Structures are given as C-alpha cells and as structure tokens.
Length: 307
Ligand code: FAD
Image (cartoon, rainbow, N blue to C red; front, side, top):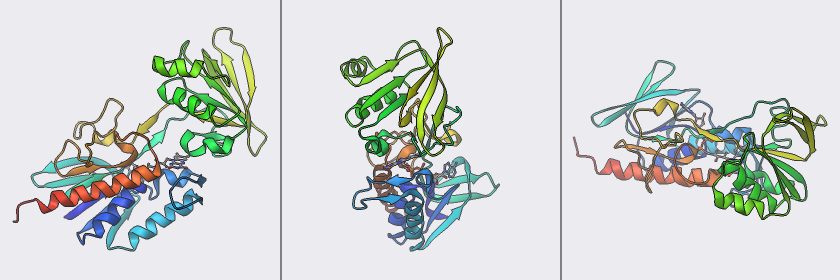
C-alpha cells in the first residue's frame, strides 16, 4: 500500500504529493486531469513570487515538480469510491482497479457551474470569467456584468464595482437571494445596476472578445441588450465530491468538511483545496492547504502502532 495516496492533481494535490514525498514515504497521486482547473486558465497573476504566468505552463510546472520526486503518478484515473478497511483506505477507480493506502488526501477540486447559453464557451477567457479575484483587474475601467444574485454574485458585484467602471448584476429570480447586509451594500454603490427577473439568453462578441449580452425580461418577454467587455458567471461552484457521498462528511454544498489540519470525518483521510470547506478558492490557498494536509497525514502515520 501507499503511505500517502493523493486523489486529484491540481495545485492542492501537487503540493500534497511533493510534501509527502519529501518525507521519504511511499507516495502516489491519481488524477483524472493533472493540473486541474489551472489548465483552463489563461493568465495567472496572483501566485505570489510569480508575477505572471499562463495556466497550462503553471500546470506543467506542477507536474514537473511532482515528478522530480519519487512519486507514483497515475494520470487519467477517475476515483469512484472510498472504503475503509481497518488501518487501510481503499480508493476504487472507474477503470476497475483499486488502490490501497495508509492515508489518503482528497483534492478533487471543483468546477464552476455554467449557464449554457450561446457565447459562453466561445468567449471563455475572452471576456467570460468565473473568478472576480482572479480576473477582476483585467476589466479595470470597463463595463461588466455579473450573472447570479446569490451571495457569490452579489459579493462579486461589490468587489468588481471597486475595480471596473460599471457593473450590471443580472438575477433570474424576481429578487436577489444574497444576505440582506450584502444587498444593502450593493444598493449603496453608485456604479451598479441590478436587473431582476431576467434570463440571460446569449453572450455576444465580435469574434475575438465579448461585447455584450442579451437577456429576456421574464415579465414582458422582451429582449434587451447590454454592451459590456466582460461577463462574470456566478451561479455556483460545484465541488467534485459526488463520489464521496455517504462515506466522508460533506457540507450542504457538497464540500468536504475539514478541520484546521485538513482532517476529514474519516480517520487517516485528509483533504485540501477547492473540494473542501476552506473559504476562498484560489491556487495559492489550495497549494498551502495541500502542504498542510500532507504534513497532517505524515503526523497521523508516525502515530500508528508498529506492526
Ligand atoms: P482543481 O484545480 O480543481 O484540481 C482538481 C484535480 O482533481 C484535477 O486533477 C481533476 O482532474 C481531479 N479530479 C476531480 N475529480 C476526480 C476524481 N473523481 N478522481 C480523480 N481525480 C479527480 N485561482 C487563482 O489563484 N488565480 C487565478 O488567476 C485563477 N484563475 C482561474 C481561472 C479559471 C477559468 C478557473 C476555472 C479557476 C481559476 N482559479 C484561479 C481558481 C483555481 O484554479 C483553483 O482555486 C485551484 O485550481 C484549486 O485547486 P485544487 O487542487 O483544489 O483543485
């Protein structure tokens, strides 16, 4: 068995694998797509000490760093179940194989919920964005929309209002669903317009970049167009934890519940990154938590009885 088996090869998993391997223990990392969300990112400007880089380049650097150590890298492997047998944890893969380990680090990340309208895929990273902390500054002095009036949408609109020229917040429902305190803050901002009861039907562009969006007023059925340089889709971040339901404690949003050391509800099983309850989903936070989970797993291993 592995001493540490990491499931998920994004920034959290890569950091966990490096930290575990540096303890000289038997380490493996199984992931569906090594690199994770970073592979879908164009520019990264907030990984401290790297002024700017590109997602695919960053992903390659993660894999090179992991491979520099004696780590068993198992790519294109999707985990489908986790079972504990005494001191060992078994991770079952969709390929039919299964891996056993004395400790496991779950770092399967998350995915942004998409609105699935024409233009969204085409202009992804060309004006369509999902992360205000990451991409907000790219729209300095420009007009943007935020789709989604829950907490994350309203937080994004407040955040962006301080950076961009103007924000149009679009909510499908007849009212915003964010906490009252956020709604009051939003209403106090002069450069935000809120449109409710509106169904976004298309994100438009000039072939190379976003230039607007079209929404339908659900009350009148009329279509309206707003001219913009960017659209932030904020209708939810979904953790990749469906496969853990019933075995590891999840929050009501499906996030793996972790304590300050990254421990989950299952002894010997730790977790890190966007798949967990950690607040703020960012590369540097995921990587830091991956390191923390690996050290916690090592601490767990050295406390196991000698056989
Ligand atoms: P992920 O990166 O999501 O990696 C998850 C890993 O688990 C992947 O290898 C995946 O294939 C694997 N996996 C999933 N399910 C399974 C399974 N069942 N079995 C096996 N493997 C599985 N953050 C920043 O800090 N700066 C930015 O500029 C930035 N820009 C972003 C731009 C975009 C378009 C997106 C989508 C995100 C951006 N983020 C940015 C957020 C950042 O990418 C994430 O916070 C970070 O990647 C989280 O790392 P992670 O390791 O927790 O998960």
